[in-house]
Picture (cartoon, rainbow, N blue to C red):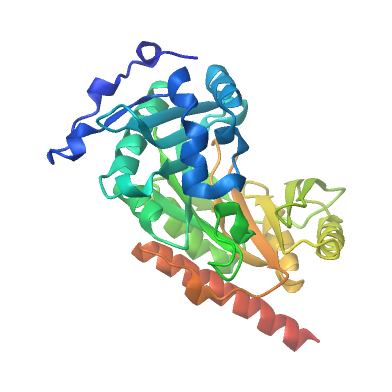
Length: 353
């Protein structure tokens, strides 16, 4: 496991808060001793079925930290007990890292421990040469959203109905599938982007890029031609499917709709489709998908070398948008735009029948 000196950051470099009680906590990199305490922490906060299973297995947690695919930090109380955990997730050591696996024991909340761990991780990300940080904030409460907002991250999309309530130990408490607010922040200055979007989605995309501090221009689209290419996955336990289009083709719309129908007939509650923003054939393919009931739910920012994505979703069952709790002004604006897009798609489909 990389030690703290190897990344140029130590616990002592995290400024202690002014409040004396908050100053009794320490934030540092995960140690083998800390790892043995994480399963109990995860079970108390998230129950026995948290989506990131490694937090229940110390050896696996340490292995992921050793490879750099996970960078864990912990918060310790005055007695040296682990009371919080947060991590950078870097599958394949990507230059885009996700801040996640965030948890704090209930009795130690409201002492800004998430903020302190998040700040520590941001320093590590910069030292590692990470380009950007993403976070998935829950929407059944707003606390994780506020942490993202305080660190100048901005919403880029909302993943609707992504997980069953049991994924966050909310079965019987929250009455519908869980939705997540995508946040993103560039750690280093990104190059300008060119996107190929239908006219009606350009304004919201420009707003997102502007908030992220990245220049964007819109190119002239081309009709899809030839054979398309896509990667398809289905998570049966989460009742969700994902279709990642790597090359839009003349056959892509039909193949996506056929795959969506198969998934919906096999217990999928949500199907998401991601299209490459930098491909000139994305705009007409997106319009065709909207005719079949898919609706815009945001952008997913990636390494500029790989290119960013636009996301559409198809929901099997309706969601009550009033149950989605949002804190930031742009998050509220973005949800309204998504809801308007959903309503427009439904209205146009009804009119076409």
